[in-house]
Image (cartoon, rainbow, N blue to C red; front, side):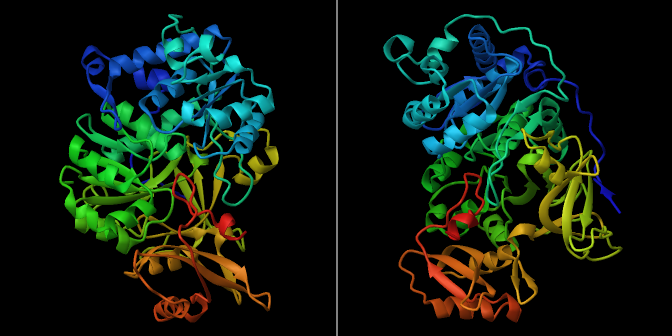
Length: 534
C-alpha cells in the first residue's frame, strides 16, 4: 500500500526555471544582495544577477547555442556559477555540470556522453578542460575560460567578453515538462555514471515542494559550501535560496576554519552539510573559538546522518539539526524533517535517525525486495524494511540514451526505485536503513554498513570511518572497517574490532580493520566504496 505526503499539495507553476526564479523580480528585490563571494567579500545584487544572466543568454545565442544544445560547466562554487548556469537555461539550452575534481579523461567521458557543444570553466581547471575538449572535438572558441585573458590573447572567450558583448537574450519557447534543463550525472558509487534528465518542471517542482517545509526567509543568510555542480547544491542551495530572495555566501570548497569564519563574519543563519562536516563540527576543538550564535539551522543530506552525531552538533552549537533524503533522480529532495523539527507541523519532533516525511505532491511505497510485495505502514512503531519507491513531479524524465537503465529504475509508469532500504513508521516518517546494493551479506544476515560507520564515529579516537564487504580466505563476505584516527590517537585493529563487538549483534561484528589517512568521498559527501574495494 502506498502512502502520501502528510503535507498539503503545493501549486507547481508551469514555468521555465528562469521565469520561476526571476520573472517576478521587483524593484525591491533587485537591490537585495543575492550572492557574496566568501573569498573576496564582493557582492552581487539580485538585479545585477538577473542582468548578467540575460547577457550570458544573449552571448550564448549569438554563438548558436539554443534549445536542444548542451553546455558543460566545470567550475568550483563561485558567484559566477549562478550566472553561467542560469544563463544557459535562459538561452533554452541544457546545462550538464561536471565534478570540479574530474580528470581530463572523466571530463571527456561526460562531454561525449552528454554531446556537449561548449564547455565553460575557470583558469585553475582549464588544462584538464582543454585536454578533454580537444579529445572530443570541441573547438577552442567554444571553451570559455571565465577568468581568462579573452579570445584575442588566448583563443578562448572570457566571462567579461560574454557579458560585455551586449547581445539581447533570445526569445525561446519550449515545454517545461519535457525540456531538459539540467543533465547532472549520477555519482557512480555503484556503477557507471548516467546522465539524469531533469526537466524545467522537475527543478521548479522540487523548489516548490521544499519551500513550505524548509523554512527559508528573505532575511536568511545561507552558507553555500556544498558544490553547485551536484544536484543537492544546485536545487536546495542555489535555486531554493534564490527563489526565497535570501543571501548566499559562496565558498569554493570546505575548509573548517573558513567555514566557521564565514558564519561568524556574515552572521550566517542557515547552512547545508554532508555528514563528514558534522563529524568536524561535533569533534574539532576549534569550533569553540568562533561565535556561531547566528546559525539557527543545519540540514544534513547526501548520506545517512547518525542520530547521536547530529544531536552532538545541535547541542554543541545550540541550533536545530535536521536531515533530509534525496537523489539526483529526484531533483533531488524527496524527504526532509521540517524546519521546526516536526513539532508544530507534524505534532511531534522527528528523530534525527530518520530523514523525515515525504515532501508535498509525492507518494511512497516500501517494497520487500525478496517478494516484490508492499510493506504496509504500521498502526504503531516502525515497519519492516524494504526498498523505498517514490512517485511525484520531481521524478526525472529518465537516463540519457539509456532506456534499459531507465526502465529498471522507473517502474509501473511513474514509481522511481531509489535502491535504498527504508522503514516507515505509524505517521509516515521514513528512516533510511542502507543502500540495497551496499548491504553486506554475512552468513545470510544483512549487515548495513552505515550502522557500523555511525557506531565507529562514536569512538573518541576515531575521526572518520567506512565499512565495506570483503571476502575472507574462505570466500565468505565479511564487514571490513577503514578507519581514520584522530591526530595523536593510537588504536590497534583488535581494539577497533572489540569496540564494535561489544555493541552489535554477533553477525554485525567488524572482522577486519585497515587504518587509512582519508576516507574517499564524492563531492556530495557519499563514501566511495568502490574506491575502497580496489
